[in-house]
Image 1 (tube, rainbow, N blue to C red):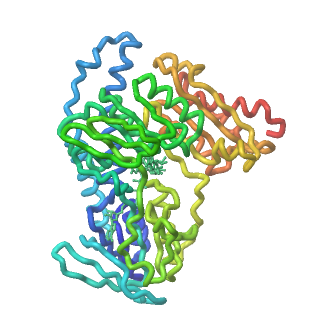
Image 2 (image 1 turned 60 degrees about the vertical axis):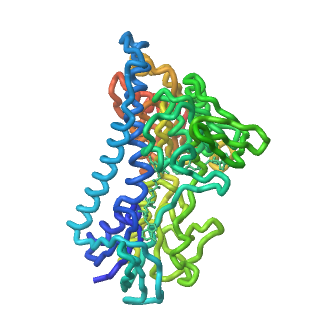
Image 3 (image 1 turned 60 degrees about the horizontal axis):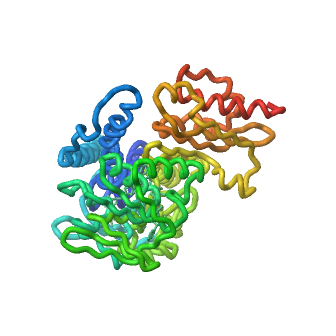
Length: 467
Ligand SMILES: Cc1cc2nc3c(=O)[nH]c(=O)nc-3n(C[C@H](O)[C@H](O)[C@H](O)COP(=O)(O)OP(=O)(O)OC[C@H]3O[C@@H](n4cnc5c(N)ncnc54)[C@H](O)[C@@H]3O)c2cc1C
Ligand SMILES: NC(=O)c1ccc[n+]([C@@H]2O[C@H](COP(=O)([O-])OP(=O)(O)OC[C@H]3O[C@@H](n4cnc5c(N)ncnc54)[C@H](O)[C@@H]3O)[C@@H](O)[C@H]2O)c1
């Protein structure tokens, strides 16, 4: 029976553990903070749970347009209750995953691990764990998987103090809503929290180092979100780099590189993450990292050291829970000699949980416009969709991209309140190389937002002589 030690119990680590156990391997997971990892305890799950509460206020705000008169200020926010719900849900999910691992025969160790001796062959590796009581324990294994995730990036001149200068993991300990929240960084994390706090009635200023929010996402989608933000009173400061952040008794100030200042009651730093790889003893073990400290892996999660695999955010491949989990499973298939398909990032679906949500899959519009992929494209505004009209939705669209000659779907974007759900048919089409005609011929419910997906596909078919 193969002995496998997994360092880190987030999606990469726990999904790998379940896969390895299913194939009969003897699995030990060593985790320092809690099973489920940062994903479940501090990042993805808490933020989406928090956003679910703010979504209720979104509906209240919109209700008046549909003839239901609820004053938004009557929808009182009970912040401690929201925070408690976030924490309870995160801990319950962590406990669920822990029980599942134990029931599958996985050994769980609470400790901080690093690589010890590495070599090739059976029992060639040692992993040294410092346990909660300060003692160390050494685990021998045939295979090691490193799945240690990442942590919020901290600017030395903007140290979070948990009171006025915050990272996103400290938000759920605030006793009261900020009066004016200044968010530094307009990536996905910054945009999601700008949305959430605005919906809770907080004045938000978003400091973006680039020309727009979501610089890495679809430009049309980012424009829709910017319009929605502007309508809800978010102040967006573009081309602004934060040099440092200072605080006094009841305010915090972001000092920008051009000399200007932005003051709020609180500052939230969302300036990216750094991999948790600094104290793993990687260099001595022959595991190569890049300059940012991310572990270099191939498409089956192998590192440069034989028998040592890595998966998830510590590899920097694509920091999503779904990708971390897939990398972890692939590592186990490969290590255990099972059939394995290398990871395909072009089929990954992801979503940004703002209002509207932004979801995408496959090839991007930017890559098509740059000539990297020949494609025919369609962009269908949701304003023409009957269900959208009935629900009073003014914003959003569906984009589908397909190969010019064959009509094979290669990507798409959905901007809609539930885009994270609506992207699935396009993701299935991309994964299975379906043609636009196959989506077009599929019955969608009338009236439904998904009708815009079949309609967009029909518009592409119409111009496609060969299908
Ligand atoms: C605010 C936010 C929201 C997000 N929302 C989404 C979303 O909606 N959808 C999505 O797909 N992704 C989302 N992500 C990304 C997602 O959270 C990550 O991609 C995911 O957590 C990566 O999983 P992982 O297993 O690599 O690492 P993690 O979840 O970070 O788990 C790693 C674990 O390893 C432990 N560890 C670290 N070092 C050691 C050590 N030396 N010894 C033992 N244990 C160690 C850590 O404590 C942690 O428990 C979000 C990220 C952020 C920041
Ligand atoms: N819904 C989701 O799936 C979800 C949610 C959150 C995060 N994530 C994952 O995490 C990844 C990282 O997202 P993120 O937003 O945390 O980080 P990011 O690195 O994508 O964005 C950070 C932003 O901060 C800016 N920045 C850096 N230093 C700055 C400074 N001094 N002043 C002003 N701006 C500065 C950067 O230019 C960048 O645009 C995402 O790409 C995604 O894969 C996913």
